[in-house]
Image (cartoon, rainbow, N blue to C red):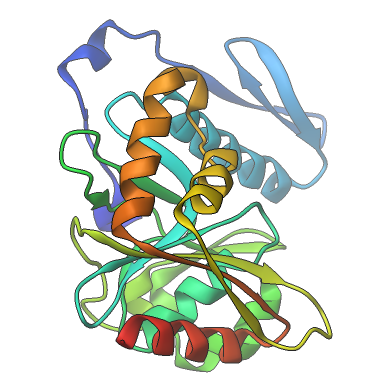
Length: 250
C-alpha cells in the first residue's frame, strides 16, 4: 500500500505479544488462522484476504494505547479544521469522506479518527479508503486505477490521492463533528447537537474503550466543547457532501 505502510509506533511494541496470521490452502479451500486458530475459510481466496484486512484493522483500532480511537471518518476542511464523521459501518462514512476529498478536503481517515490525549489533535490514520462497488459509479471515472487494489469482489483499497493529488492531511484541531446516517429515500436533514449529546454519541463510537476506560470521557468532553456538532440524515451522497461543505465553511 505504498506510503500507508508504517513501522513500529512505540518503543513498547517490541514487548507486546504480536499476533501471528497464517494463510492455509487445502484442496481448493483457503483459510485464515490467528495463532493457530481458524478465523475463516472459503473457496474464494479474496474472501479470506478481505477478512484479513478487516481483522487487522479492527485489532489495531481496539488495541491502540497512544490515542483515543473513534470509529469515524475524518477530513480537514479547506479552512483548516478537522471534521469528524462518527458512525457504525453502513452509515456512509467512506463515501462521504471520498466526496469531501474530491471537493478539496484533506484526508485523515475513512474509518478511524485518533485523538491525541496530550494535545487533543485529530491524528491521521494511515490506511487507504475501502471502496465498495457501488461507489465506483461516483468515483470510478476519475480514479487512478494504478492506485487501487482489489482485495475481494466486494471491496477495493484506494489511495486518496487517486481522487485528488496531495490530499493527505496532517494532525488538525477538531472543529466539527457530524454524525452521518444514510437513509434511502430520506430528505437531507441537519440537526444541531449540544455538547452533552455529542459526548454520548461519540462515546458509543469509541473503538478502544477497554484501553482508555474512564479517561475517554474527559477527552470527549473537551472535544465536544471545542467542536460544533450536528446529525446529518440524507439519501443523496453528493447532497451530503455539499451540506458538510456548507456547514464547515462558516
